[in-house]
Image (cartoon, rainbow, N blue to C red):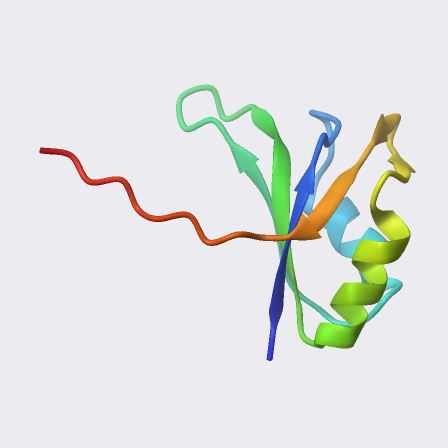
Length: 88
């Protein structure tokens, strides 16, 4: 089953290809997304990586958390599901 990983404190110039390559060293990357502002299309400084294997995901989290990548110290952990906001 695929494991979704939160990657925080990204350099604003980081790309999805760079994230995919970084996590690809630990196993198969299903998807890598850098979250961007919908108005300016500028990176918000975080993203998500989905890995095919749970063991590979755990290894990537253990190795990459607090590691420097493109000049920033990453924060890497399992992504938490956030409930959707409902508006009245």
